[in-house]
Length: 196
Image (cartoon, rainbow, N blue to C red):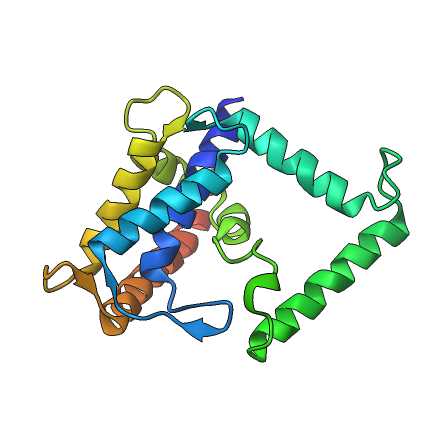
């Protein structure tokens, strides 16, 4: 249970930071962003992730999102996913990713990779996720409230706003993303040494 909650926390901060750190989403370069815009975007992301509308992100929301994903793949709604249904959904995702790379994907582009969720799972394992979850879940209750989510997003915004003028430019966004990438690579390189 705790492991699942920590994974949610990692996904939360990855999603909250996407507006600040990602240089492009759905094939287009983001414009400069003000702190107010970042706060609005964080509220929109939180609302999408709060699947049951209870004002917090926890295991119940993850279960609801997984059920929705299962239902999208289970085309004949018989309660199981056949190999053909799985292959069909995988083909749709590939087409969407390719369309996005060519600037044609727009709003229909699959969002699974956009928020960094897949990246959090593989390379960093739980060590990276734990630190991020602790940052998001500031009162350590095992859930992330909207206030905690927004605070995490604004903390990332403020870190990226190098000149502290209330706007993150494309150059600042790139510098923040490059710094984040360097930290992740350093952690990944240090991980095998720690496990021995």
